[in-house]
Amino acid sequence: MANPYQYAETNQERFLDEYQHLLKIRTISTQPQHAGDVARAADWLKDMMLEIGMERAEVILMPAGRCPLVLGEWSGAGPDAPTVLIYCHYDVQPAAVADGWVTEPFEPTIVDGRLFCRGAVDSKLHVMANLKAVESWLAADAKPKVNIKIVLEGEEESGSENINAFIAAHPERLAADIAVISDGAILAPDQPSLTYGLRGICALELHVQSPVNDLHSGHWGGSVHNPIQALCEILAQLHDDNGTVAVPGFYDDVAAVTAKDRALLEQVEPFLQAEWDDVVSAPAVWGESEYILPERLGARPTLEINGIHGGYTGDGMKTVLPARAFAKITCRLAPRQDPERVVRCVAEHIKNIAPATVSVDVQTRGPGAEAVLLDVDSLAMRSAAAAYAHAWGVEPVFERTGGSVPIAFECMKVAKELVTMSYGLKSGRAHGPNENIYLQNFYNGVRAMIKFIEIVGESRG
Ligand code: BES
Ligand code: MN
Image 1 (tube, rainbow, N blue to C red):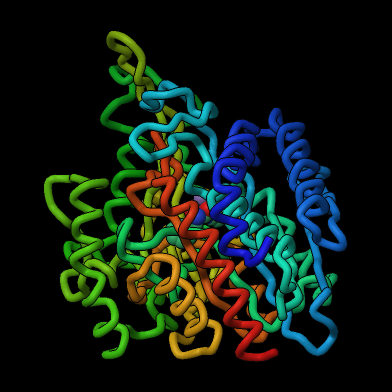
Image 2: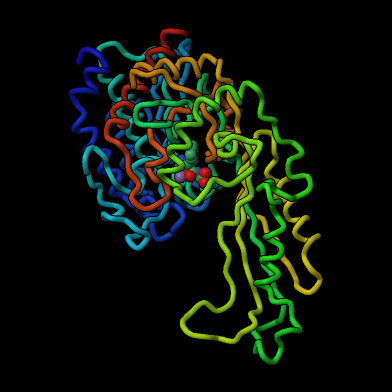
């Protein structure tokens, strides 16, 4: 095969078949009953790495025995050549027909150039586009002028409990000149973008208890502070009328949105507004009025109530005064906010405002993750921009995304430069029903990664 671009073009159909094979495996990391599926996918991916010509490939079990990492290496470019590390995750969120799927969630279905399946965009698109780009290089006459490492995570969607410890214990395994975090979305099918910021995350749970047991609301109502009411009173005090988080200290370390950010993000505003209208379609936009939509979505921290429950919600009437109420909260973090400190601020504030008439227990959940903010002028970023311009035929714009990839901050410790490469769309409905991609984005993604490897090899080789 003459060159990698031709190889990719010729093999498009097989690439699509293999992508669909991976999509059918229910790699739901958060549900222990799917541990076998996750392990099966990991083995399949390891075998594929060896088949496409990686020199080494390994399934690395995590301490809990579930959700392994798959690590592959090709060092044929020699010790003086730069190393590119490509990170993606192969696990997915749960999906059920009842959530509103029009097709079977784990049966890939192609309609009008779009492929519908759980994991289509988040993130098996990235796993397969990048593996197939590397395959195209290793099958070509001229070999790549960069060494390549690929790391595929199996527990990104359930909080990445173990990968950071693995990196800390074996930094040399993932050491690289450039790390590519390949996940997320571009702005529009025909407008590629490069993400120069990802938000961090932290999580907590709030348990409110008042009477020891559920009570007769007629016997005791009027004398007991209803825990659901108390929970709502607490939650209602966590934001002000402008949508700004009303927790003292919450914004202390937040990196300011600069004039350069504003200039870059103004360019993406019309695209994000269009995506918002299409995907969110709420009655009106909400949030901090002094920030434009791309800043609210990517640069500013947030506090979200993810779920609440308590009391009786079944059929008919139940005159009960419930004993307990419960809420889950996550915060998206801006660059420089420490997840542990933010969790402490929120927990302390909740305890301070909690009325003495109920008991409140606040618990931290998950390890959290710091945000990352990348240099748009780095060599890695400029190489990625040129790769997108080649693959899409359109210059990319720069944006900051609201999502989190917990490994991203740790990656900055083992790689000299970090860049993100996304091929999907927000309207691909990651985490929701009818998740999908445009097939063209898969093929463009393959071409973008082929080009990226070429450019990095030429600029440093
Ligand atoms: N693909 C997303 C992260 C993402 C979203 C990156 C948008 C870029 C743009 C990833 O799979 C994800 O959903 N991450 C979780 C992490 C959480 C479970 C710790 C998230 O952001 O909610
Ligand atoms: Mn996800």
